[in-house]
Image (cartoon, rainbow over all chains, first blue to last red; front, top):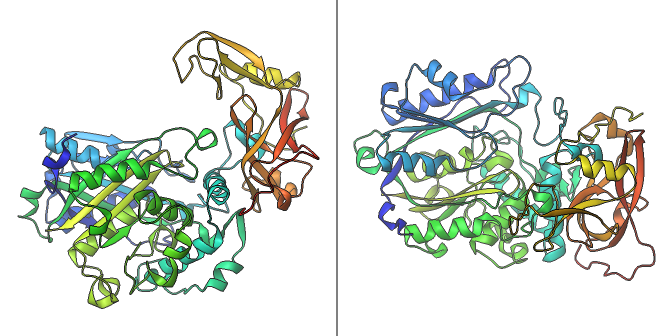
Length: 393
Length: 145
């Protein structure tokens, strides 16, 4: 595949934030709408410019909320896009779809959006679930979703190579240090020591609370357009230098990729080949981190270290502020907020735009001035994987 | 009574499996073209796409491919079971199925530990296949786990 012709051809031009963390008395839809409107404004665009609208998956609505659809979001934004899309099963093709629509000529500005009220609404991906009445046969065995399913993968990895809490505590602590520099991170005011990690309670062993991502209220949105158009817009130009996707698809219980190689390997290679670079050219990473182990296996499959070498690789703050390979500089899903792949990808864009304040890569944090950032997104349980390489022009 | 526990909901694809469980038989589909024994049930073989299929009864033995220990009950009916174990069991015939490991302390479990099926009647209509370690089996104690 000759994807190199698409290198740097498309850019991410506006980022929309909302209040985040615990934000009660708000519908999921309200976060989608606010994030989307802010992304449009941030880019210097008008609503009518948006001709493509792609929503991430909306989970089961809480309480009396309505299910968010692109119809509803378009109505509330007062726009009538050419294309509407929403995936319903956690696949991670949003950015590749956006680029394809623009490349084919159907769209000029594609808005990608996500929002949720999971924390105040009591829906949980981690613990304290109040409305997760299971519907699958597996529930008869007490099987309850994502924590256990990723924990199963992590346990298998512990069997196949040397990993476990010694590796994962480094990931959790390093990311928390980034969150402590990020005023909008849910864990901004809460430092974490190795002891804190070790003392945090088990959820589904081998995962402790601090191995698991946060549950958040809030939203995040961004806009994809051509780099040619991006040059005329408000923000510094950040291109998609490379992009790759891979969908192993098999349910985790039948999978043979619990301990890798996950989709990160193939998707990562596609994105690197398109960008014409190797991982040695990467200045920082923003990795989808639903669990600590997800960060380890993703970076391992990308080729940053060999199986089991993560135990030493993450040591001495390599991925923390001041480290040689910063990872998840907002605090990530573990310590900033959970907005699916929008948390890592928008952070990569903001870093390259130079808009990250106290946590800004470069002199402010004793790290390398970033030119190229590798981002990942992961859907379901290693069933879908997207890799994006972002570049500051 | 199921004590409020969720029960399987057999559909056109999975009904033969659950009917087998009622008879304490672990039934899987075997492809008559390439011999692959598959799970979950399907109209075709995922390996060769043949529709030529027969249901076989598995031997009920396998190894623990992976396992986890629940310390939080996400469904209140399992609160009294904590800590409990779910595992993926790799059956001798090949399929990987999710179940519980019983008759064993969680800290004694290891990946690749040999296990065999035990049947647990939940209510009159449903019997669940669970697994217990094969005592005295010669197995790797799982260094590094």
